[in-house]
Image 1 (spheres, rainbow over the protein chains, first blue to last red):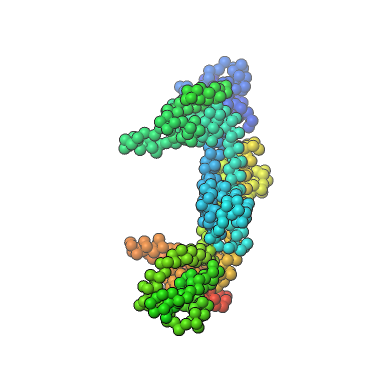
Image 2: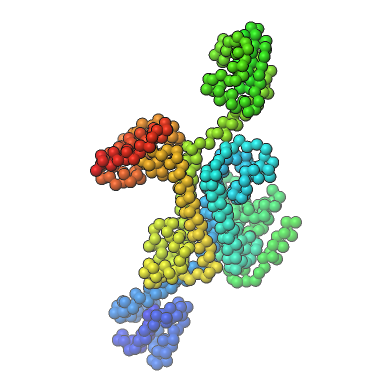
Length: 316
Length: 316
């Protein structure tokens, strides 16, 4: 006698593949049993039937599997429903930290883009009123904050600007400009909130990476790789150059000088290195990051502080 | 004897171009006098000196003007200061309705761009949680409003969605998404405020155009032309095609079919015309707009309702 377990039930057949006994799964059992089947374990139903009959197990590799397939044709609907349930459940559980981190990283880039777009307009528009301010304030967020929180007179006094060639604008004309500035402030606040969220995500999901690379650079590395798992598979030389793909391919194509670092360029450890040691610093940092992500992926200890210390000592 | 008035003062010379008497202007007088000079009128100082002496006026066209120039060399600083003052004043007064309308039109386009950017992200991110919603709601602003104001359960009930394959997200993971939606709401509100501002600008500056074309399309026409003055100089056939430059040049270059309308395409009058009469409707509308902007520029009466009525009767 043979036993076969499909996603929707277990079946015992005699030698001629006539059905001897069947146990169909309930909705709840389908998901639970499917997990067991995927892991290659016996389901409860199989255990029960194996105790009752002397059975040989049939799976998709078995020579007589075609007979099972023939039999299953009568169970199209059950098969379809169970598959749908399993697929839906898989989708439901597909959202993981990797995806959330990547969304947050991409979103931060877009918030910045939107903020820059509106800031450029604010600079041009507000300069009808007070063109001297933009000459002194380079940072978009600071500019918007000053514009929306202080009057022209206050700003002139604070920044020691004696005279302005800006036009006088009535309240009606000034208000839309100030509203635009307030919107940019609001985008700044959103950016800060999302950075905090990213930080907490990174610290719980890959603490070592986050500590060593910083949550922003760490998140970008993960996002570039596609997942923590893929990042773990990268050699440290790849990590060193992540984000410098353009320069790398230019190097390979035209023989231009190869890039020394990608995303890691913005890391304080590389930024603070001496000019002729930046490449070396990036390589050493990538080495340690490569260790850190492995610790994170395999749920190892929190060793990042030690790694950081080693780095710092090496480059003292 | 000769008299010459520069931007910083009036001077009377004898036959040998020795200075007889001078009146230098104060700061306030410089601006006032400069306006009179530009309009070809006599300044107070000139009048006074003309009464006192029997003088011939010298201007830049006069045969003996070189002698004046020679003399003015001693007044470099006064000349420079007065010019600076006049230039600053000109800049100060250069902000006019044209510029404010153009800024507002451009700004509205950018707010839309920023909102679309963030909305695309919101759609993707929120769909981890409730992918069925974006299939039912096409409009970005509506989507963000629903997401931020109602729970998944409420939305499922309202839209009659029985089951969701979305993942369960904890409050910590949901919050950043809702904050993003709130930001998009805030951008919608800003857009509304700025549209109201544009409407009031258009209605006070070019009431006829605004009434006939609508404040948004009217504003875009003005922005495309660069100013109301330039729009007045355009023939109505140009107004008809404003915004269709690409298609027009393609027509001229490759002989493709010429465009029938540009920005006016979005006008309800053209939209509601029969398919084979759209071009005709756009031409008639452009004719009337061409009249409307002339009335606006030359501060004429409010005749737009009559123009509109004529149009409607023609196409009944």
